Image 1 (spheres, rainbow, N blue to C red):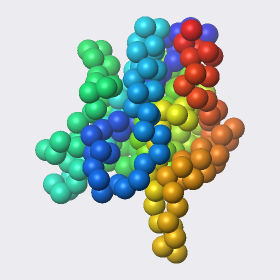
Image 2 (cartoon, rainbow, N blue to C red):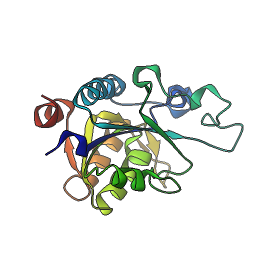
Image 3 (cartoon, helix red, strand yellow):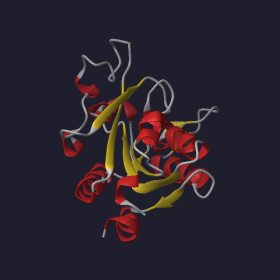
Length: 186
């Protein structure tokens, strides 16, 4: 397959997720893995897409006037890489992402970013539903612990693993960073 026909989508790799309000997080190496994948994809000439969550609420860590809105330096966009802002969990809703991928003849997408059960999962589900050959990189995403509807706390690793399990072979193929490198980036 032509290398130009693949795209890397990095969802919400923003400083907002460094805020203590989120609590316990798993996979503290996610950003390092995303950066490693990004460097290799750049060398291969893949289409690179940065997704950036934004909020109209001035008190939100995702508001454009707040530091949290910024994309983390470890995956900072360079010239020629597109940045798409979104206001909901899906990177496809209210954006031109689907059109951008189709215009650029991208059929295979690799998804990384934050957080596994929210924007990453929603974007992955829609990518699969829209017919893209979708790969989600398990160690290039992360989750935070959270309470369920009965106020029972579920730890970050469990949230992460269950989120991946609900996506695998239904909406996407789940790979590790090393598996992705061996499959596409050697």
